[in-house]
Figure (spheres, helix red, strand yellow):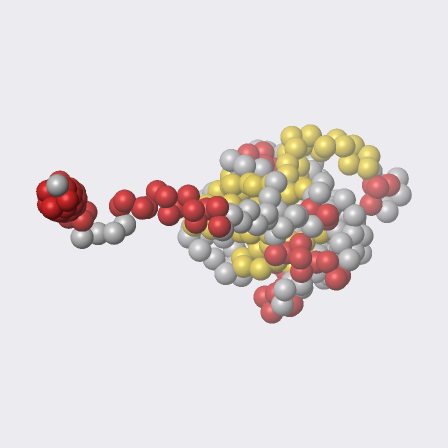
Length: 320
């Protein structure tokens, strides 16, 4: 009886061991046979679990927030609008609600971006505006006037973006000695007779840029320091400086254009259609140069930055 029970127990243990071995082999065979490629790659079976475990062990770091805009950019105003077409002399001008201290100007400039197609060499420069305090205006211009067709995008901090285009080229050169204006529009040249500022009331010398234009403007000599010399409406007025220089229709030019200078500093054109033709073809950003006169217009009297040499202009940037 003892011998039989011992034999039975041995047989049972042997069967159990064989069964376990058979299951183990069956399990290996299933793993290898069902997906042999994955059997040799330890990643798939644990990838999801590993990712979850890794996420628990190393929590995702929050992405860094962009640096806030300098306070000076709040309320700042750009001189160009999206979709606008401007002349080849138009600078990008940014004015501030309050003066920007010298120590803060570099931080402001770092948040100003200008992208162009085609590319240009350009720079920002802090300009003393005639009607504003020091530190309330910074302008950007290329080294040379824009090429016609240039596409420009300017960003002032995170909240202001403008995209505009440079149109055809128009540059008018007024020679006060010969009382003439040479208009070069996309390579085509014509000459116009003008009258400029009389002696002692000379027209500004140098490069000016068209600020805007109006078909009819009231001009009052008291606003420019000439007492009660005149107060009247003038037609086809092209605005050149904040100090009050216009290129406009002037009845006195009918007799004096091409002969003498008789104005109080503006550039006068005859009423025979000459003034109207020029008025209708110019756009903001077109260039008007005056040669042969005396004092050069200041950089902040309108857009007079073209009268500043390139080296000096770049030196006016807080980043240089």
